[in-house]
Length: 303
Image (cartoon, rainbow, N blue to C red; front, side):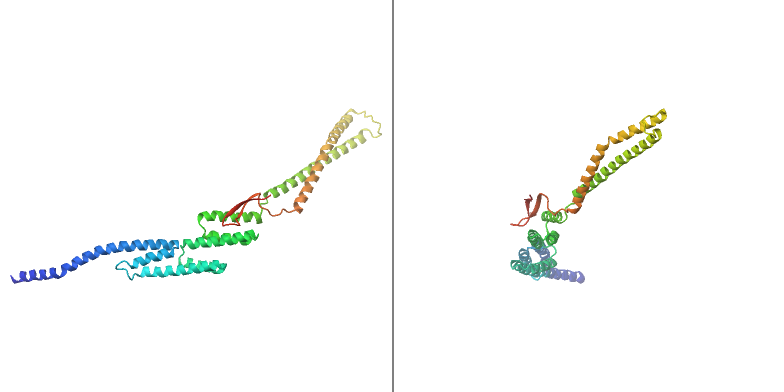
């Protein structure tokens, strides 16, 4: 009888001491879930702003994280606040360097920002704009290779839309420095072919005429060695008549021969001219060039 009584008393004591704790723990779990939701909301906003390079807004969200009960000493939020402060300092220094026309120092500071936060979209835009602006200045000074180098650097950091503009600018420089030679090469080949073809055909016409005249003279000496103009042998006369007609037909091509010689001479002169006179680098009549008034491109026409 005593044993069940002792167990009952022990159960009451345990219930008295443990029940409040269980209730507190239950409330604590529910409270923790609410607190985690609030903390995560601030943290996500902070991370999104940080990725964009909006360090001031990101720092405010991380500070909100520390104000959530139970997260006053959160290590992540504190670390991110320090990162945001560093980012704000570096950006201010970079802006001041650009204002003082100290481009090298600005690029160095922008590089430190990207080392701090490789996803910093704002810094990438600033770098792309900086390199494009320098490239435009060099282009307008006709320092095309240096301009292309800066445009190429800008492409590394530019947005998709900006990249299209920069690619057009680099192509414009390539067209200025390295004009496409296809038309000129084709013209050279054409003149060479015409010169060789016309000259070769003229040679064949002249050679055919001389050959037929030699054959006619040879038959004449055999058929009429005395030069009387009378050929009694019918077979020999037939040979002479065929040779005479062939020579006369070849003689009638004399006009074509002269024309071929003239064409060949003109083509040869044109070929020599194209070899001696090299074209000057120039852009196409309609072309793109960096705008002198702003960033981007301006449409131009070359007369």
